[in-house]
Length: 127
Image (cartoon, rainbow, N blue to C red; front, side, top):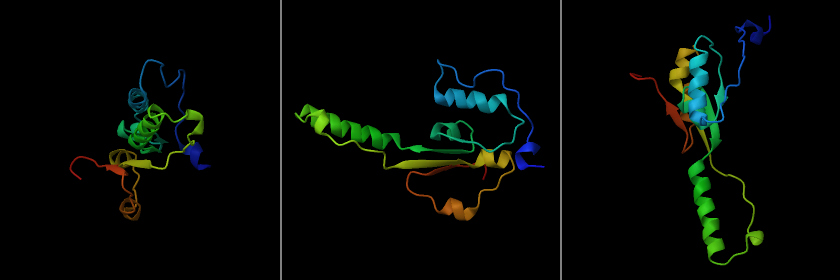
């Protein structure tokens, strides 16, 4: 039997995201709606903070700082067409150990020790 065939089937009759709710709200609702499903999942940083297993994404603070830098250049007279296009350079990884413990998954210590600045681990209370 293929590994994914062993997971219980989930009937989805509605969209998991509502237009009026933020990503953290939608993530919390998604995690609460499927409590018996022990399937590892990955999403944004906010998803892991809301109870998902892993979150990976751009460091928003660094993006805001770069945006402020470009606004400053434009206000000082630089032409927007002359400014370079940049891609994000800082990313964050969030690991929720509480969720890992709940679904019976062990995260290797060697993986946890290789964290970079900005990476976070959400630990269970009392660990």
